[in-house]
Image (cartoon, rainbow, N blue to C red; front, side, top):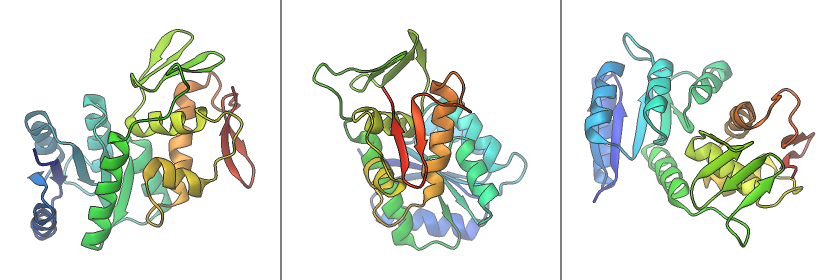
Length: 228
């Protein structure tokens, strides 16, 4: 079965051009030109990935992203003409896994989609008994489950893979470049904002005091590490 992509874009020309590019790559594509239509199509189409424009009429892409995220953990790539750092971070904070800016090269877009889908389908690493314990955190990579003090925490696929990657090697410092390569699958397409924003979101869920993290800590000038 072909991978299903839901394309949400209000510009008719861009939507049709992008749809042709994706279909040429073998994807099964459905589309919508506003957030309301996207939510309807999401429920009916059950996409494997969503390409979501920020500048939509009515409900904007940020709110649409939050609504999609409440429906599930399908990978979301924000597609936007905005290059302001605040807007990029806001999109990631709303729940997007990645972003591309317009105008984009078709090869860049399809490369990001392939890397994102490959990552979420890739098995995660774990200890011999399939369990990673970090004091009050328990990570079960094979089950896709994280518990804090026995209570299950809802993470996106990207957040979960980020935690598993670092938690499998407690004390090891991971640079942003290494995390982009190992978690996102990017050797040249990503940037540090992806890592920083997802670390921020991860801390908000797994730390008792995100402002003073005890599990996912910053190593100034080098990157991040997990402390058991």
